[in-house]
Length: 161
Picture 1 (cartoon, one colour):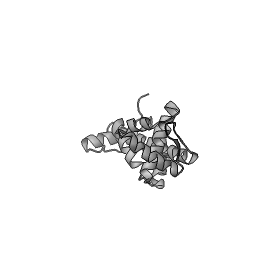
Picture 2 (picture 1 turned 180 degrees about the vertical axis):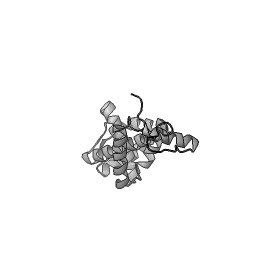
Picture 3 (picture 1 turned 90 degrees about the vertical axis):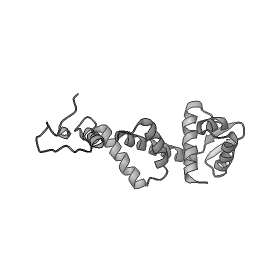
Picture 4 (picture 1 turned 180 degrees about the horizontal axis):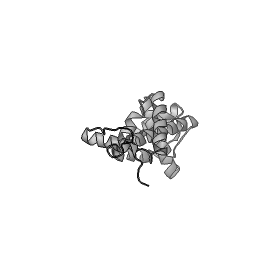
């Protein structure tokens, strides 16, 4: 079974399990807009590989192996989504792109992105370099800055409280 499929199903089961307790074939089929028969086939494979506990008509739950993958995948997804939103991507697009990227990003890159997102969130009220990036993205223009020049260089200014 493909890693992406395992991660996607484990993550979705984890999310739905938190909302309803039990996750059924129709819950997954509805969320993914696929047939219940397709979900049943995947459930059987995930059960065979010890990612889920599956009993027909009773719903599924994650095994400890499946839960570990689900939590890690969700953590990557959330971090990637936040990173993309920091760049100014809409929430919907960031969510879609994070879902694709979470399966291919290397652990080294993910570690760096996680630290970057944590840093930006902690210091988001500090220098306005993100505002400068947004300006550059929209206009292609850089701010010309010299030390002590806050008029032409908003990166040196603090955001108003």
